[in-house]
Structure formats: structure tokens, C-alpha cells
Amino acid sequence: MESPSPATVDSLLVEDFGQKVDLTRRIREVLLNYPEGTTVLKELIQNADDAGATKVCLCLDRRVHDSHSLLSEKLAQWQGPALLAYNNAEFTEDDFVSISRIGGSSKHSQAWKTGRFG
Image (cartoon, rainbow, N blue to C red; front, side, top):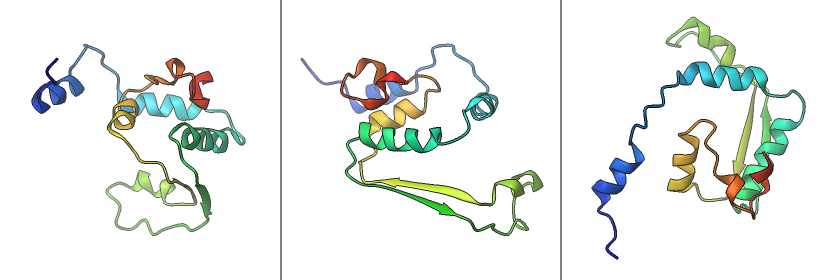
């Protein structure tokens, strides 16, 4: 069987199935409904494990950065502090496709993934 051409693969990645979602509204909903506490830390570690990472680093950056050069004053609230997360797994094309689709995780069908349970 012949492999699809790169142009065919690219067109598959950007195919529109008619789903229309206001991305910023959907992200806002996810953030508002996200449980407080240590859930985000567990999810970062779980994602690293699922990606095959052997190292995970979390850093709480308590700095607050200047807001005088921002495109909008509303962005000032996002200038710190911040939680920085790093893992040594390779970010793949499949990972990119997965994060491009809100709510479209494929982990439920991958028995070896910690995140298959949600």
C-alpha cells in the first residue's frame, strides 16, 4: 500500500468537520470548571508519564512582570506568578493534533496511558 503524500496528510490535519467552537470561550469554561487544589499537578505528572517522560520538573515562579508594554491592560493579571512545568518527553505530531482538538483526547483507547481514566 502506498503512503499518502505530505500534501494529503496536511489536508487531513486541517479538515473541517463542521464543528464550530469559540476557542477562547471553551478555554474559559474549562478553567472555570477545573477543580481547585492539587489536580493540576497530578495532571501535569500524568501527562508526562503518558508521554514516556523519565523526568518531570515543576517550578513556582513567584515573580510578577511589568505590564506597561502589553497589547491590552486586561493581560496584566497574567504576568505572574506562574507554575512552570517541564518533562523530557518528545512532543510529537500526534500530541499537537490532540491538543488542537478540545475535548478530543485519544487516551481512553490507549490502555497503557495513565490519563485514559480522565
